[in-house]
Length: 214
Ligand SMILES: [Fe+2]
Ligand SMILES: [Fe+2]
Image 1 (spheres, rainbow, N blue to C red):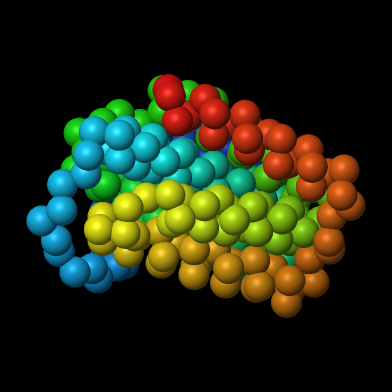
Image 2: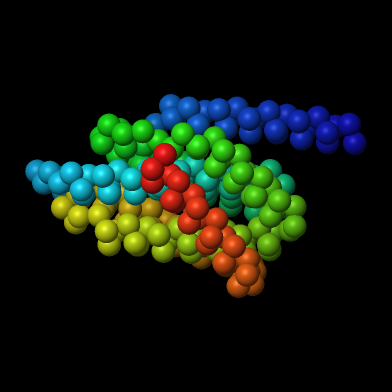
């Protein structure tokens, strides 16, 4: 009993360390390089620039949330396979985070000041889902990844096609999110009822509204 408690506190310390590192914006080394893209000399107009950097700020925070969710879920995963699966997905979300960070650095703009809050709340949601069992936890992944896929497609439609670097990042992220969702389906994740999906959509809309600006 005492051993389990020590183990949980040690895991929580690891998670706190991760929280500090991820939210410091210092983790810029992705395991996989930025997706290939064809360079262009196109200069975004002022309006396009404002839109693109706001949307990339949303994507950056989305990846902060994705990592937090996966690490929260991994903390209470019921079996080793689920745990490994979640950690692998979190690593890929880390690549996405680094790519979004690079693009925000290119734009010389800031990341959301509320990222520590988004991280902490997502981590708690992930941990709660995991405590309800792996099938619910995977169901959570299915719904989140579906929503992320949809908003990435919206961003792809809105951002000028000439911004090839941003488009390459978003296209690769979308492909990875689709695969994460499919993996969760294959692992036996349950489909959430409509009211829960609607609640999750409403929460993500609030997050996007705030992060676009702050
Ligand atoms: Fe992602
Ligand atoms: Fe994902």
